[in-house]
Image (cartoon, rainbow, N blue to C red; front, side):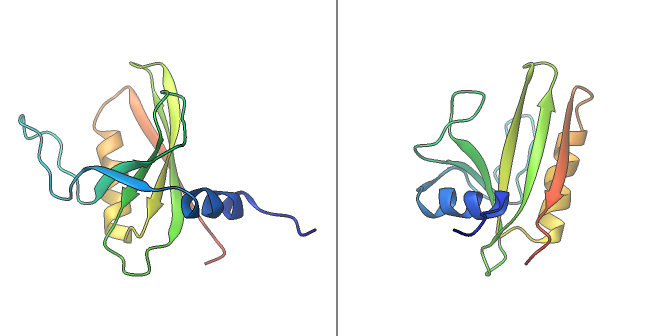
Length: 116
């Protein structure tokens, strides 16, 4: 039996899950503070620390590959999560990381997949 990597298991999880989009690309919140350059949703039938599905950012890269994750820490909520990047361009990844750097009590660590 071959040894499966972290990324192999994430690929299987995504493959077997329906992606539910909650926020469309270019959505702007009423106070104009939040603008998403990607779609944002979750993997239906999965769970994360917040009791909801695993979060997903869906980008515009036509290859549509899972090639990065963002590990977040939120001192206000006192939680951490991972967020999957599927089909995100480098520009989209940078914009998402910058969003998490806007608030002093929230940070994200981008981890890119090396073997693609």
